[in-house]
Length: 222
Ligand code: DX5
Ligand code: ZN
Image (cartoon, rainbow, N blue to C red):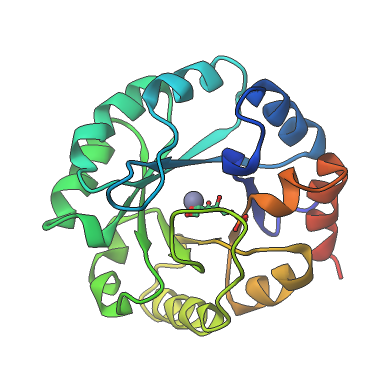
């Protein structure tokens, strides 16, 4: 395993009746983070996980819990997710009027701050606030469902963000890429500038999820 990048398996593609096994898979494979997709059936047409589930997961893992809120009213969920044990809380720039308010709120709860951007939103929506966050989550599919194909134009968006971060001495900000990341394209996503890869279906729908996590980490040695 290498520390060159972090893998964040998304439990959205795991068996929801047995999330403890999903956490054990992440432990055995050596995944760094656990990615938790929160959907409210309004910001996206799907309904998933809330704070009580995160609270239960927290009791079963020490790993960095990466909460990705795809909701229309993220401010109201920050404190509940922080109390439930989230390490990072990511909101969508499309869902807030004033991103500074929610950034301050997330920080005041003691969590890392992530901002996410959908594939068709101009990067100019997030660049001015990247100095205030820890993570920028680049959606490489339209959010809502696992198992979609990676949008190839995402690589250019990742590279542009990477250049912006370097030019502005902000390379402490991690670039996380979410949607359609597979073993076959992970290397090119890393080469574009990703620091964290989210992988849902590739891990949890594979025949041997532990091996798949290990295979992701082997990629960065190639
Ligand atoms: C999509 C979610 C993703 C999803 C990724 O809206 O944010 O985290 O679980 O799943 P895959 O890796 O299958 O595209
Ligand atoms: Zn996600």
